[in-house]
Length: 366
Ligand code: TXA
Ligand code: MG
Image (cartoon, rainbow, N blue to C red; front, top):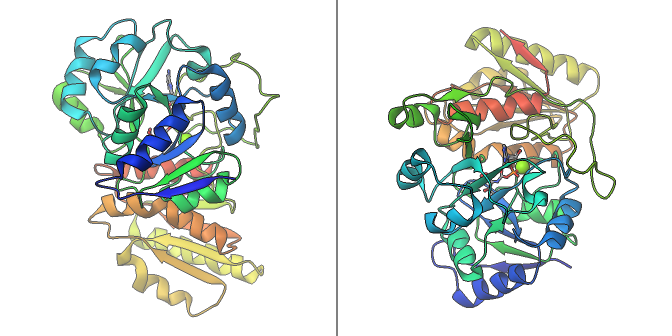
C-alpha cells in the first residue's frame, strides 16, 4: 500500500517531513512535490533502492537520474570539480528549476548515472522538497514520479494513478507551480549545452554565460513502447541527452500538434476533429483561451471535449496546466488529442518541446 501524507505546501509539518525523511534514509520510495513536477525520491547512494525505483517506474536503466541536494555545499562530494560556471549559475538560479550536468565523482553509483561519467544535480526550490532533503541529510535521486512514458505528475493524484502500490509514500503538497520539468544544462563539455528546455530559459542563461548551445536532436523519439524492469539492458546505451531516445510525455491517445499561422492551424485542427468524429471517435482538444470562440464552430457534441488552458499572452499558466490537461483527456477516454501550439517565448519553448515529444512526429505545419 502507498501511504499519502498531506502537508501544507509552504509550511510542511516537521513531524510529517521527519517520517518521509526516515523512509528515504531507510531505502524507501517517496514521492514529493518540487516547483516543477512531483519527483519520486530515493537515497541516491543506495544501489538496491535505486534498482527498486527503476522497477517501480518501469524505467530503462539506461536513463540517468537527477540528484537533488539541499544546497550548493552538497554538490561538491558528487562531482569531480565544481567549475566556475557551475558556481555562478548555482548562485543565480539555485534553489530553482535548473539542473546542471557535471563530471561525476566516484561516490555516485552507476545506477544514478546509467554508467555515464557525468551526474545531473539540482537544488529544488519547493519548501516541501527542501525540508525533506534537508531532514533526510542525504542526496536524493528523483526522476519525475510517473510511470515511464506517461506525462509527468503535477498533483499527488497523478502519482497515485501511476504508482499506487508500487511506492511507499506520497507527500501531498498540492499542485506544483511551474508544471514542466527543470532546464537541463550540460556543463561537462567545452560549450554549455541545454539538453532540455525549462523555466530557466536559454535567454536567461545567455545573459550570464558567453556561449550556450541548444542540443540539436531535442525532438527525436523512439517509436514503440520500450519497457524496462529487470530485463532492461544494463548501462549499454546510456543517453547522452535527457529523455531524447524515449517516447516521453505521451498521453494514451495519439496527439497531433498544429503549428503555424492561426487561421490555417485552427482550420486544419477543425477538419481533423470533424473527420475523427465522422469515424466515430471522441476528440479531446487543448487550445488557448483565445481559440475558444473559433472552436465553437465545431458545435455541441458529447464526443468533443475542449480544454482551454490559458492565454497565449501568459504561457506560464499553460505550462502549469499542460500535463494535468493531457491526463484529464486521457481519463475522459478521448480517442485522439488535437493541440494548437503555443507561442514560443520564455517557457513556451519548454511547452513546445513537451508537446512535440508527445506528438511523436504527428506535427502539422500550417
Ligand atoms: O524538474 C525536474 O527535473 C524533475 C523534478 C522531480 O526535479 N525531475 C525530472 O527527472 O524530470 P527525470 O528523470 O524525469 O528527467 C531527468 C532527465 C532524464 O531524461 C535524463 O536523461 C537527464 O535528465 N539526465 C540525468 N542525468 C544526466 C546526465 N548525466 N547527462 C545527461 N542527461 C542526464
Ligand atoms: Mg521524467
